[in-house]
Length: 211
Image (cartoon, rainbow, N blue to C red; front, top):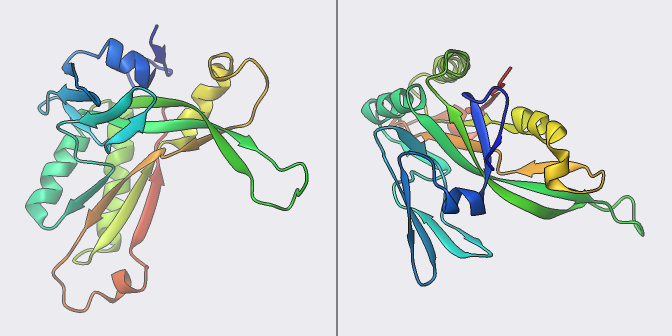
């Protein structure tokens, strides 16, 4: 059974095992000796998943650009922007349980991975598209002609999904923490004196919502 966000057309949340067993339309899975290779239709899907290890072996998404996408000129940025606003975007995230130390409450909390999911969002959905355009325009206008980095964060809709599907994650009340719930766009300008970038002032972040 596929586990879907609300509304269905905007976001889906699918366990990795299920994704490999029943890949969505446009995907195919090749079984290898050391794991799996996943093929996708680059015309319809924008895959931003790094190679990773699972209990089933190493998983490789053949046509993936990776979680951190680097762009070095205006053509690459324009092409990436068009993909974000027209294709279904795929990302790997982890649902974790936060574990506090009983012996030392001041110590940093640890997390235990509960499940890995492939999350997809519809970049062509009017509401998602509007947020993406707004976030990207704000980033570009803020650092025009300079190098920049922008993180696109999906934590909020994943937390909302977890509240509705807590029974899937655990049979007991837990505090769910999402890791790797974002992807990064990095643009490198050829400007000689790119001071904002050097001093870390060109880092931006915007959050996506599903409702």
